[in-house]
Length: 412
Image 1 (cartoon, rainbow, N blue to C red):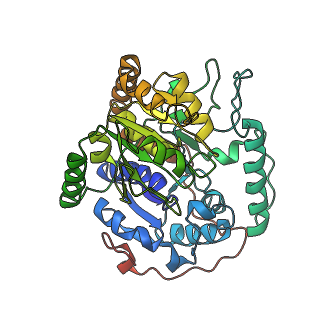
Image 2 (cartoon, rainbow, N blue to C red; image 1 turned 120 degrees about the vertical axis):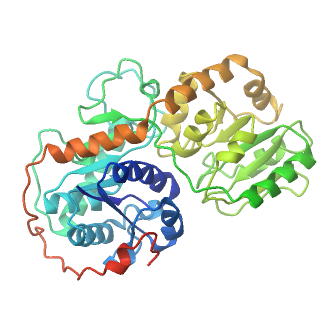
Image 3 (cartoon, helix red, strand yellow; image 1 turned 180 degrees about the vertical axis):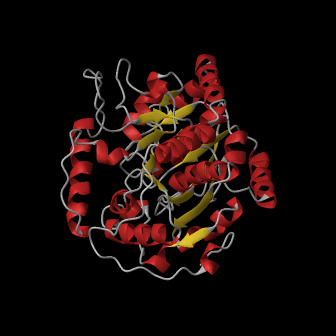
């Protein structure tokens, strides 16, 4: 079976796809990764062959920051690459509508790797669920509308489907969390499954980690790992972070990620880093403070660490609420004026919070998620009758296969 991994190239989307792809390759399948040139070095470490999207006309098509306007480029690159490697299945990310449409144009299945929790409408139940941020119904309508607009833009005929959201799930939508993250009594759509965290990240640089650890040792205070994501709390949170980590009992190791314009005070006990890995830093910390995106939430739980959450948009309010409901997180930085360290103390010192985080983390770690995901990918192919690749509904030029691009770890 030929598998083309075409996730978003940002780490939170790329790394889970690599975890699934390595297992598929271990089982004897041929696996290639399609993504931005900038991700080439990381994919090289995974050992999987790499196709640079720019070579296939996919400029700006695999960035989460451009998931809306990058759809046509993503469709074009996924279609061309899939034809060249004679893909039997695409494995992609949520929001990768261009890849979903490329699979449809080629009449092959697509398996979608989701986030930690289901974000769209449930099949049943959940009617009394609080709707922090955007409601499921509004999010479902908005994303489905974008999918329809992209279909028209790339020239695919409109389709009629008895389940209006089903195109967004592909042949299967795989959630990387745990059923505890779903609202009690809610029923997932039939092609949506929990497989577990699909944990993988590049090997940490030992010398770099030692330098960071030496700094933390010199400060000597308990460590809170802070993962900002692109936005943190919707508003500028640096004043609150500065208050929480200046002259207090804790120090912060802050992963900037895609956060712009950092503003730490000179006297704050904060060390800022930007690294492609979290593992050793989360292990060193006693608490993880995050806006509530899947990658740091799962990283914290896999290390059996409790969470402080301060959500903004997208998945963050829903996943943060799920973590609080599961008893593995508390809302933090909500009221910093009277006691800037109060919630950090409560989270750090609550033995029940720590035990629940450890229990959930052990359950996630035991899920054998890569094997579960590979099972679904293989089953999705087995369910599709073998057909020759048919031309896309819209003419897209093909390119001759250059085997140099398929070499192990080639960065283009």
